[in-house]
Image (cartoon, rainbow, N blue to C red; front, side):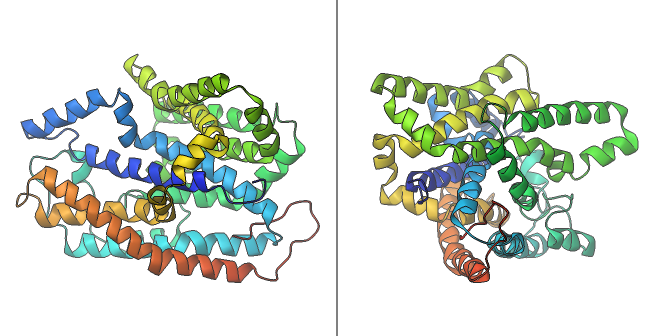
Length: 396
């Protein structure tokens, strides 16, 4: 497994994508004007503190994606033999082509399907597609890595912007992690995250040009990229030492591995919720228990035989294959369904039908966008070898 693909991690990526989808369905009810929707939302919020809430723990799933991406990108570098230029071309093609397809569909949806505010629903869902397409926004989306309003056409693409930026400098993360002792390798990224929070807080208090510079672009702000280096670096650190991690994990008794699994779940799922219940909503404090839980969970998922056997089920593997398209296209299906059928069909059956339509859309996008993009990315890297720098690029 040192160099091979970890099927259980692929499956978990699919489950995390489903979690994000369901979290957005729950947010459709947030601050709803209609009493029954508001009551349903508050009920779901209460249930979110039970283990059932894992099904719609969207923010935690995003942090897990970032940790997992760091792990996978590191393994890709070890498996490959590409120059930085070849790696970059492959990475851009792999992420950009499906992204471009989703943005184009989002533009068409905003232009032709948007019917105005959805009565009885809250401001979160009603803001999407409310901006008319214009040349400036099209240019910003085409650029992909700039700071811009990523809510216009597809409200999940902010994570892809952050991932693409980190991908640009990921070879530097690889170099640092490889050449540093594991006890200190993550500390600079942790320090950057802490510094980012303080800088953003000071900028928000100061306002004006400084606030616009530091926090401009909303979720695609460059300051957030600095903050999100931490989960990517944590995943890379796990990948760098994965053989030792696997050896130590499998040497543990069954009881200790169970305790580790419970701790991973508690940190990942309950860490942020406990802090929120105590009234602390700061991003840094919120995300770090989730990040540590995701890292521990990644170890359990990758190496625990019983978990690996469960996630080897064909359904979970299928969700893993279409996870990128599922994540990328579900906002478009949701917004299209709401603007076409809301008020004509009850919201509960409408969302249920939307989920089925999302799976079908993701399957089509996977076959017609993702797989061709992956083939093109592989072709770009064939025969291109890296100079002898001690770092290699991905083959996938």
